[in-house]
Length: 138
Image: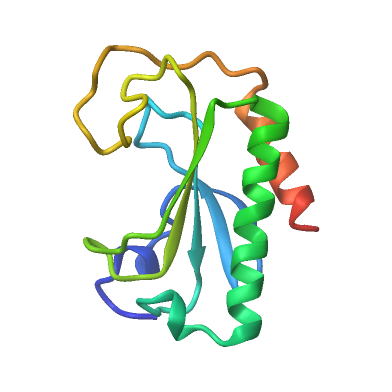
């Protein structure tokens, strides 16, 4: 844990799964992208390469399971994966279901919006949350 780190000091969103190694949250402050999830490593490390082999595999296996759930339940046009950490140097992965008609598509979600649009999802997000937790065997 690192004092002053926003991902050490708070959960970073609505927690849908928590393990000893990481937590998965649904990001609530991106209303144009409702199916935006983040896997946050619990220990304060800045880079993916800071993890042991076992932890790297566990991290990517979890990111893969989140992606599979999003694809299965929401049938997005694309799933974006990103690990930036330029603003918050605490290891976290963004897993974002993207839809052809969303406000930014096909540009990244951090680009300027191209239109006003929020995708209509095939399933309620609470069902997606539960499926993610189940996929991670929680």
